Image (cartoon, rainbow, N blue to C red; front, top):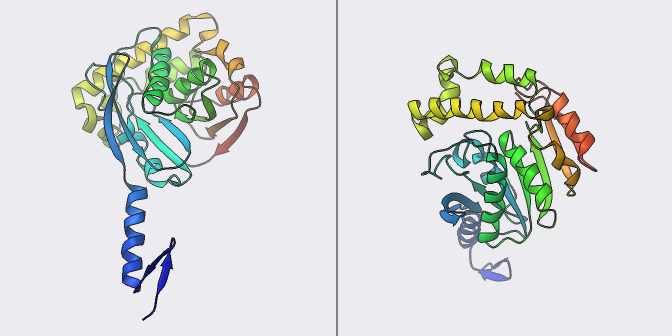
Length: 262
């Protein structure tokens, strides 16, 4: 009888090895989900992997784990990382409450994100944030330098310019979007709620243009101490190239990489 060894155990046939291997793969790829009470709100999250390096995924405007990070939760190395995706308050499955956009909504999201990870038992972790999630990540990193290990941001900006306002206004009416673009958000929110919340986001982001230099978090960039990778899409229609260049200049030791995947 042939014997096979897998992870220190003996098996009598290849089918036994395949069953154990499949079970191990299934365990590594499984995604747990739940809600955690944080700052008075029940925040939805998904978690996978068993690695020592914890990573939090931060979605973009109105985005959630379902719409923004399915491939990352599935594909990031589960043995090296423990990956957490979350739905910020008022987004996705972290409702109620309905989403609102006070002047400090990014700071509120940053505090929620860090406090969620602490509540889940992570004392130190890295951040992957895109769009609004990238802004939230930068604020979290600046205000919690002892907690954030590393950071990757893409499609993010630290201020709102007049050019940005024109871009935001051009996409304000979701009825003018293609059905393909609307579908993921309408599946989460419903058509009416999505349109209403998107308009509210437009008003919320526009308020920063009234601040000196249009600042969202300009004053915080020099406080970021973790290794930071800034990613920029060369053909990104919503984030002009001066935004990643500004981040590169003002986040100490940061690097930038451009991509052409659109």
